[in-house]
Amino acid sequence: MNGFLSWVKQLQFGSLLDTVLIVAASLVCIIFHETSHGRVAYWLGDDTAKRAGRLSLNPLRHIDPVGLVMMAVLKFGWAKPVPIDMRNFRRPKQGMALTALAGPVSNVLLSAVALLLRSALYYFYDRGASLGTVITFLEYVAVISAGLAVFNIIPVSPLDGSKVFAAVLPDEQYMKLMRYERYGMILLVVLMFSGVLNTPLTYLRGCLLDGLQAVTSFPYAVLAHFFG
Image (tube, rainbow, N blue to C red; front, side, top):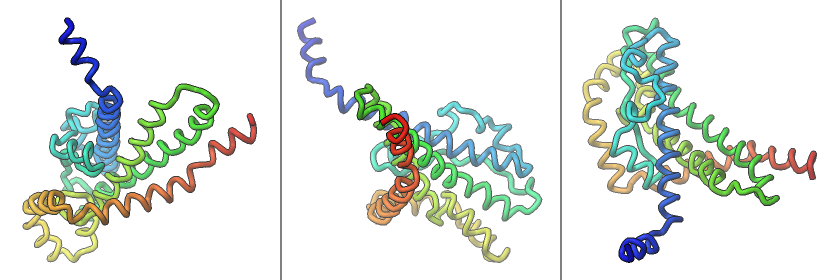
């Protein structure tokens, strides 16, 4: 028993809580991102994601272990691609682009909502409410979701940016790009682990968060105006 108590005392519960919050925030961002892909595809006439169970809120249906670790460590990462059959779209290339774009756009919106809630809760936190953990969680959601958004606009398969970029190509060039799509993941992993993308992605994420923060900070001021 004494040995067990000594081990417990050595644990850094602050770091453990941070880890739990980061993983939880990552899962929220993954689910929002992937279900947005599937939902938009469904609206455009393709029910492949729905039949595959990818509209589910169960994170196990969406997570890629490597991508989740990358999100938890670097705040950039990915999930398992949602299955899409572009033949079910009335305009295949455009439908594919809209479905792909839904992911990054949904993450921008999620980040904005998290910052809005953070601003509102900070008013009560400044006045003694015990909301520190919730506010930290919302901050992680905002940062990770913004990171997921900017990471996925990279035009390298299987990221969403490659689908959007492909939509503006002529059909012949589009088919050539699709033939090399399977090599995209290898290139992506090399770029990530080499650190080449860290600086530009961090800069873009910071710019996005600064912009969102500028337009989502008003709840604190509104609450202070009405309640003092």
